[in-house]
Image 1: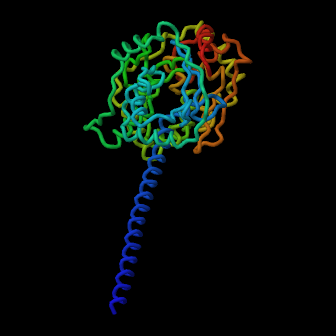
Image 2 (image 1 turned 45 degrees about the vertical axis):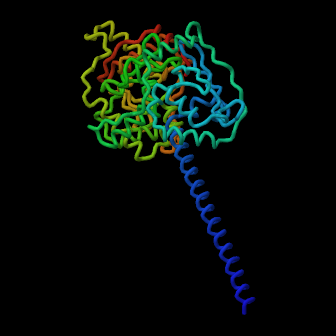
Length: 426
């Protein structure tokens, strides 16, 4: 009997140890699975946020490997070459920590403490939350590492001085995450966070001083340095203010690049194709509400018109442009300038045609107009370039004509304006 009791006790202990080990193993497996799930969610969020920030757009050379850098960004201060942000340990950010990445995004400093130039828009990215920054970093670390050494930037003297850059930052850079406006809705604040931070709209839609600093943060428009395109004001109804647009149409423009009354071209078309089309419906709606609000109280309306009376000589000048329009443009845009909604944009009443700067219209005539290919508009209609057909004087005549016909009224364009417009890249 004693042996039987001893045997049962041993069996009990063995079973207890087995179940205890199994319980510990199960707990560890659950914890590991939970950790993997959390990491997967963070990477997925980071992938989405990286799209909204258009990281790949800048950190990918034409025809190059995604995120491996090497894209050349020409500015009046020199040529900047984007860096490799894949997790390669020798040429990328494989040795970086979350803190290193946060220092770059929020403080505008590289891992080694070197001050970064604002061609990397940390002036806007500083508003991104730490949680979102960590998610983007987790996504970038999940990418396949690509070994690619990129050439150094060629920054002109004296702008290549870190001391001068530090002074610039003291004068023009204010770090800090986005602070919600408590007088606005949660949706408005989400849209503002996306536009002001990751979307870095102000990097293009702003007027800059001689030192390259933004004059304000209200998206009042300005020429895009190195590209020779004009990013219109989003706070003026004379340019691209959206106060009289329905929210659904703003969402459609952000996600497809095309509506019945407007389409995105040039650099903005690229932003829609590479970034904005991937906005969730909720975020696109939020951004639309924010952008619509910018011109609700537009009181700074100024006209680009430099004449008030249509004189005989002016009429004859525009008639020459009309003859060229009839030959080259009328088939698509129509005798009434109304085009075909969603296919060929209307020129009559088109603010992008009549706004103060004629730059975008000139470049569209020269280089063609190509809306972005998006999920919502997979086969966009395009306009062919005319730079091989028309002389600068003829381009000036056509642009002047469409800016002053069908009720349009804007300043005239000269051959000199056309020549100057060809200084940037398409």
